[in-house]
Amino acid sequence: MAAENTLSTIDRRDLDFQLFELLRVQQLAERPFFADHDRETLNAALDTAQVIAAEHFQTHNRKNDLHEPSFDGKTVTIIPEVRAALDQFVGVGFMAAHRPYDEGGQQLPWSLLQGCFACFNAANVASTGYAFLTIGAANLIGAFGNADQKARYMAPMLSGRFFGTMCLSEPQAGSGLADIRSRATPLADGSYRISGSKMWISGGEHELSENIVHLVLARIDGAPAGVRGISLFTVPKFRVNDDGSLGARNDVQLAGLNHKMGFRGTTNTLLSFGENGDCIGQLIGQPHRGLEYMFMMMNEARIGVGLGATALGIAGYRYSLDYARQRLQGRAPDNKDPASAPLPIIQHADIRRLLLAQKAAVEGALALCLYAAHLVDIEHTAASPAEKQQATLLLDMLTPMVKSWPSEFCLEANKHAIQVLGGYGYTRDYPVEQYYRDNRLNPIHEGTHGVQGMDLLGRKIVMQGGAGFALLLATIRADIAAAADPLVTPYAAALEAALQRVEQATQAMLPAMKDGRLALYLANATLYLDMLGHVVIAWMWLRQANVAAAALHNDAQRDADFYQGKLAACRYFYAYELAKLDYWLPLLARLEPATLEMQPAWF
Ligand SMILES: Cc1cc2nc3c(=O)[nH]c(=O)nc-3n(C[C@H](O)[C@H](O)[C@H](O)COP(=O)(O)OP(=O)(O)OC[C@H]3O[C@@H](n4cnc5c(N)ncnc54)[C@H](O)[C@@H]3O)c2cc1C
Image (cartoon, rainbow, N blue to C red; front, side, top):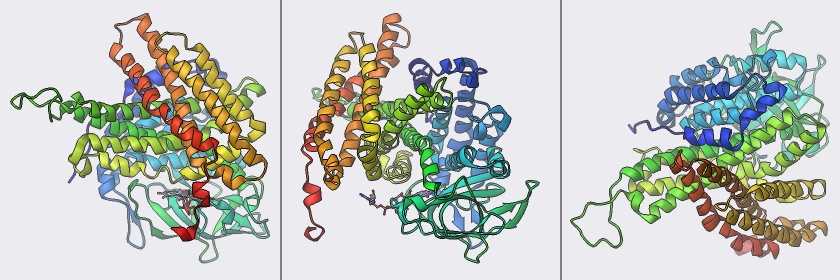
C-alpha cells in the first residue's frame, strides 16, 4: 500500500510571515472583540492546529483516499481515523473558535483561523471537509436563524455533536439554481413538509456525529419562479426534541454515494427528501430569501475553497521541493564529463522554473486568501459604518478571484509538483498525484470557474456604478505608492502600468454591456477572471516583496534566504505570469467573438 506522506505539509515560517509580518493580524487586538488576544495566544492556536493536523489528520490522508466511504444499503462506513481526527479538532474548540464567548467560542480572528485551517487542509482535505461544512452551516444559522434554531441546531453543531451540510444542487440544477424543484409545503404548526432530490451533497450521510443538520433550498408552494422564489430550511436527519435530545428519524434517505476522482474521504451523496411524505423542516428567516442568505455567506465559504486549493498547492510544492533537493539526475549543460556525479535536479533551471511557479502561485494565493479573511475580520468588527461598507465592498469585489485563482492556479502548481517527480510523481507511491486529484474539485464546486468569471464581469465590475472596481484599483494603488524601496519600485511601476491597461481594456468592453450585447460582453468572462486574478496576485507579491525588502534592509543577515526567496518569487511572477496580460488584454478589449460565433452544429 502507498505510504502516508510524513513530511511537513505546511510552511510555518511562511504562515507566520503572512499573518504577522504582512497582515499584522496581532493589531486586530486593538478591536474590542479580539482584545483578549495577543501574539502569544494567536501563536498558540497555530501551534495547536499544526500539531493536531500533523498527528491526527495527515496520518490517514492516503488511507482515506484508498478506502473511500462505502454504503451497504443501511450504513455508510468510514475509516475510524476520520472520527478520531475530528474529535481532536472539536476537542480543542476549533469548530466554534471564531464565535463569541457566550456561544462557547474563543473570539479568534477569522484570518488567524484561516492560517490554522490551512494546516488541516494541507494535511487532509477530505477529513477536514466535515468540519468546514459544519462551521459554514452553523454560521448561516447564526446569521439568519431564529433563537430556537440557534439553540436546537447551531449550538450542538458548534460543540461538534451535530454536523452540517449545504443542500443547494439538484440533479437538473447545478450552476442554474433558478431551476431548483425541491418543494416546501406549509404545515399548521409553522413547519414545512419538504420533498425533492439533492445531488452532490458533501457529508450528506455518515455516522461521524449524532445528527446531521441539512440546510436545504426549496420552493414554498406557490412561490414565484426563478431565484426569488427559493427559501432556506433546516432539515435534520433526526428530529430534535425541546430538551436537545434526539427524536424520530426524519424522512431524509440516502439514495446513493457518488464515487469521485479526489476528495474521496468526504462522502458525497444523492439525498431524497420526503420520499414517504414525512420530511419536516423549519424555515430560516423570511420566505423566498434563501438564495440571498446563502449568497450573503458565500464570501466566507469561497475564501474557504480558495484556501483549501492553496493548501493542497502548498503540500505539493513542499513535497516536490524536498524531492528535488534529493533526486540525482543529469549534469549541467556545459559539463561533458560522464564520470562526474549527477546533480540534484534542483540544480537544473527547468526544475527551478517548476518550483518557482509553484512557490509564486501558492504563496501569492495564500496572501490573497488571508487578505480576504482579514477583510472579514474588519467587516465584523468595524468601528464605523463607513469602514464596514468599504470592507464589504472590497471583499465582494475580490471574492470571485479569491475562490477561483487558487482553484485554477494552485491546481496548476500540483501539476508542476507531479512533473518535478517525473514518473514517480505519476504513481500512487507518492502523494502528489492525490493532491492534484483532490484539488481538481475546486474549480467545479461553490460556483464553477466559468460562473465566477460571469459573476466578476457581469456583476462585480459594474456593481454600484463601478464603485467596487474603483475601490480595488485605489487599494492596489495605495500599496504601489507605499513601495519605496529600490528593490521593489520596478514592480510597483509594472503594476501601475498593468492597472492602466486593465482600466483601458475594461472601458473598451463596457459599452457592450451597456447597450445590451450581454452575450458578447460575457463571452470571455473566464479569461477576464484569470487576467484580473493575475493582477491581484501581482499586487499580493508587491506587498510581500515590500515587507521582505524592508526586512533585508533592517538586518541583512536575519532570515536572509527566506526574504531573498520572497523577492525571487516576486520577480518570477512579474516576468513569467503578469506578462500574460499581453495575451489577455487585447483579446478582451476587442471583445473577441470566436467562441460566440462558433455554432454547435459546426463541432
Ligand atoms: C465533489 C463535489 C462536492 C459537491 N458538494 C456540494 C454540496 O455539498 N452541496 C451542494 O449543493 N452542491 C455540491 N456540489 C455541486 C457543485 O456545486 C456543482 O457540481 C456545481 O455547481 C456545478 O453544477 P453541475 O455539476 O450541475 O454542472 P453544470 O451546472 O451542468 O455545469 C456544467 C458546465 O457548464 C458550465 N455552465 C453552466 N451554466 C453556464 C452558463 N450559464 N454559462 C456558461 N457556462 C455555464 C459550467 O461552468 C460547467 O463548466 C458538489 C459537487 C462535487 C463534484
